[in-house]
Image 1: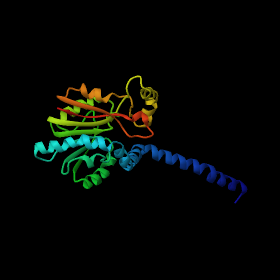
Image 2: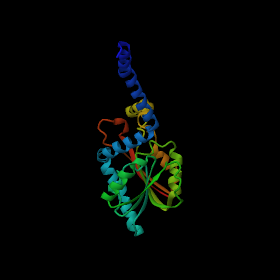
Image 3: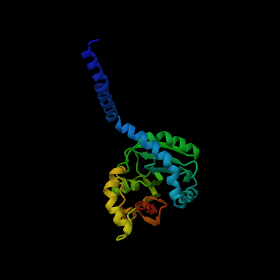
Image 4: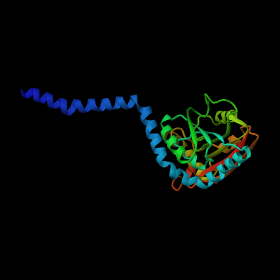
Length: 249
């Protein structure tokens, strides 16, 4: 082999091939970025469920105890819609034998939902969609609608709550638990305002300055109960201010 050929071969192997390999990887990632992001997000959130529930377990137990009262009064299993169900973090708090429709834009949660529903004696259906426009969900369908740590991320809380009321049966209950804006003029509120733009970009549209409790109060439910509390998030003080409640259609 001529020396010039050896130089060209070495250049191609050391320079051209690595660049081509990187370009191919980037191309494949770009073509499949949504799929990869969906798979990774589903896996990470499923792994984080124990920690998330630990931070609000007492509040969730108290909040969802209302479902057991509902079930007793109706004398049958509940039909529940969970908005932003994720991997099923709330399933352990629902009455067994409930039929749960899980609404989430990430279809890769489906497998985790099936697994967690079996552990908790529930029947589940998965519906890919968004809170602001629940396509395929008929009016007056559900006994209960639930969402936890979801309204912080939706584009329109108002439209989401309109949809909640549309799909609830008359007398149906909306159970919610969210992190919210801190009290005005507090140091926490100052940092929430400061960090919100970065937080929103880093966490998929989640905002830490929403006054969700007030939004629910103004939504036109027949009856609304909102209880403020502080979550047990040890290192993330900007999401400690929280509220939970039940709104009746």
